[in-house]
Image (cartoon, rainbow, N blue to C red; front, side, top):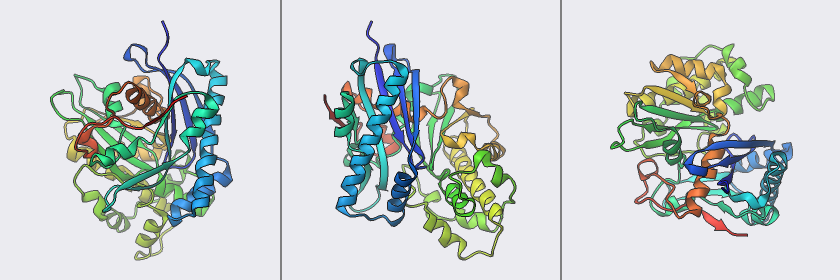
Length: 369
């Protein structure tokens, strides 16, 4: 029996690199076959960070970066296939999220921009590639995010437990999965995940991230700064809602700190960690008060200080998705492989209750071999 192989490509708001996962959806089960991670070269990462920071670029630079990322993603797929010893002809499709440069769902002319030319991915790999998932949802009146709740429902729904899935990347998002199938599945971005902590440790320690939250652990929560950070209007917006690192940016942090006394850098790091934990926890308590389990995926699962803080804020167990047999670093790549399968089969991929779209729609553009 032919296997139902798909590749998912995810490069998130943490700007660390590309996750390439190979998954088997035969008989509607999601099985991990292989996984390949490729960090962004320093110059490429710096270029993306600079563009995300200044929010402007020339058309020439845009085109060059789109092409460069397309080549990078294609090579990650080829490396994954070589590693897994599976032929390109066996893969049904690649689902490529692309690298988000700007997410702007609430403007008069809403849009979400992800780049990484799928034409190049398709041509280099000789595999049908599906990309540009977010804009169809926006065209249908939605936020274009989060798109993973539909996959979370397919993978993690439990008729005997109210589960909440928390993805902590640069931005944090949650999916609320009621055990009562008649209740709507909801999901939204809670606010910053790792992005502010990453900015701060990069500025003071020249490190990309706070490994295990060890630096934050040395600091003290500043109880005058924390309420100011939490007073941002985003946190009180009703759902559906989504945000990005163009909003919770280094400039956002600098502006908030400018009205505060001088704090020790490690105290600010600890406070930013607490900001992420509390805003996630408060969103769960507000929209999923009867939650039985909180299942965490994304890079934030490796920050033990953050995980401990989240546990302290909630009375429910806080676990890694590893407990359900799904590697926490692969959930999003697996989601975009699944979304590619949905698109290729003519099935909808968004959840209007999560994105605010006026209808369920088939997502993405299909680039055929």
